Amino acid sequence: MTEQRFDWSSEEIQALFDLPFNDLLFRAHTVHRQNFDANDVQVSTLLSIKTGSCPEDCKYCPQSAHYNTGLSKEKLLEINKVLEQAKEAKKAGASRFCMGAAWRSPTERDMPAVLNMVREVKALGLETCMTLGMLKEEQAEALADAGLDYYNHNLDTSAEFYGEIITTRTYADRLATLEQVRKAGMKICTGGILGMGEQVSDRIGLLQQLASLQPHPESVPLNMLVKVPGTPMENLEELEPLEFIRVIAVARILMPTSRVRLSAGREKLDTTAQAIAFFAGANSIFYGDKLLTTGNPEAQQDQALFRQLGINAQSASNSLGEVVDEAALLETLTTNNALYQDAAITRVRSSQSARVKPCGMVI
Ligand code: SF4
Image (cartoon, rainbow, N blue to C red; front, side, top):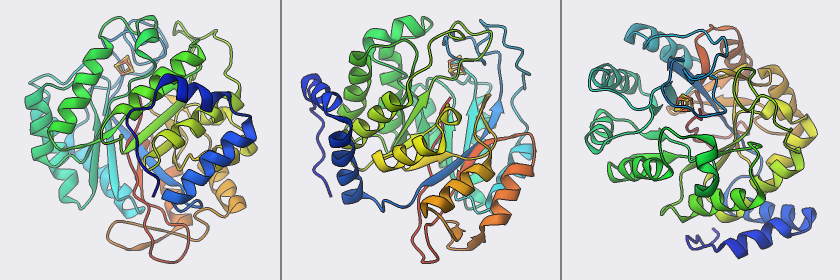
C-alpha cells in the first residue's frame, strides 16, 4: 500500500503535471499496482430517478432549466419502476444500484419517497448510491439511516474557476454537503469535469482539493466535457485526450486507493486512449449506452476492449458471490430498457472469486 497524504502542495502537483508523459505514466501505474489489481475495472450503471428541469445553472448540464437542450423531462419515478430496474440490475449481476435526481437539493416532500427507494433497494440485497444535490445535515443522516452507502456530489473544478461554471451555489456549499455526507457515515463519490476552458492550475486546484479530503473520496469520477447543444459550453474547444490522461495519472498518484472513474465523455477516447487511461490508473467506468443525458460508448465495444486488454474476460460476480454470465449481463444492460442510464455492476477479472466493488455516479 502506498502512503496516503492529504497535504499535497500545488507546487508538488504542478511538478507531477510537468513530468514527461512516460515518467508520469510509470509513476502512476506503479502506485496503481501497489494498491489494486491492475487488470480489473469496476463497471457502474445508474438510474435517473428524476430528469431535467433543474434550477441550478451548471453551464455544462443539459438538465439545467436555464438552457434549452430538448431533453425529455421526467418526474420523480415511482418506487415500483425503480424496484423493477433494481431487480433487473441485480439479476444481471449488480451489487450496487445508483440513483440520480436533477435537483438543487431534495425537498422535504421528496425525502420520504427517496428514503423509501433506499430502503427498498437495500432490501433486495443491493448496495445503494444516490446523487440528489445539496444535503442538509438531517437529510444526510436520514439517508444514512435508511441504508444509503454512497453519495455522489462533484466539485467539478477548482474553487477559483467554479464561479465561471455555476452561479447558483458556491464551492463552499459543495464542500459542506460532502462534509455532511461524511459526518453521517456514508462514503463519498466526488470528482470533476475537464475541458470546460479551465487552466492547468484549475486542474491542480481540483485535484488538490479532492486529495485534501480525509479520508480520500472512495470514488473519484473524472469527466471529459460533453458539449451538449443548447448549453453555454457547446462550442468550447475539445480537450486533448493526452491532457485528460495526465489528470487521471496525477489523480492516481494523489489518491492511491480511490477508484478513479472514466465517466462522461469516455466516447471521445478511442480504444488506445482508454487503454492508456487504464494503465494510468483509471479503474472504473460507466457501462451502457447512456450516462444520464449524454452518450457513452456501446457496451459491446467495452466488452471487446476488455477482452483485448484481458480485463474481466470471463465472468462477473455479484455481492452474493454468484457468478453471472457476461453475455447475459451485457444483454441486460444494453437491451433492457430506456430507463437504464447507469447502475452498478460488480465485475471480476477472472474466474477466481475476487470481487471488484462498484461505486457511484456522476452528473
Ligand atoms: S449538474 Fe446537477 S445540479 Fe447542475 S444543473 Fe445538472 S442536474 Fe442540476
